Length: 185
Image (spheres, rainbow, N blue to C red):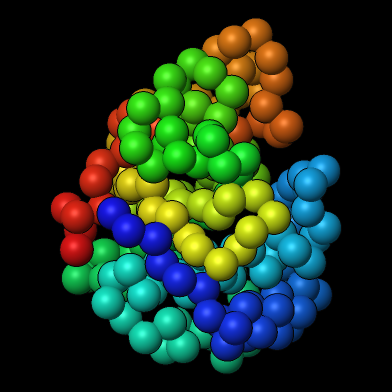
């Protein structure tokens, strides 16, 4: 699947929406390589790119306010979809994109923070995608899974398969289990 180009307009709007939502959102985690504002902006860019991927106008999925939690990021063909976006080193992103990464290695799994697990039953599908770290001009879709599969097959942990620790407790979804985006297009 080809990458979705991020326009200057998308970037500007992502910053606006991140700022509007900030006072209403419960932040579940921090990462060392991004500020809170950058992380929130990247999340919106992922949602916008996901809309484009699914053939929608990304502007149509912008909420009027953020007083309450959303029902989903995108509705597509009667399905409620959540978009999970992350940033990765170039070589790891390429290996995920080509589906040649080992699930057991560092970056081999897509993480859903433990604080977001209670929201998963609201959605039918989770789409995973990402950006090359520090280069936010293209969003790469990695694949998707049904939320029922995720909830039935994964348990929250902070322990990585290689003996290390994830940066936070999460559902560590195997990259090799992701379904091809083409299936929902």
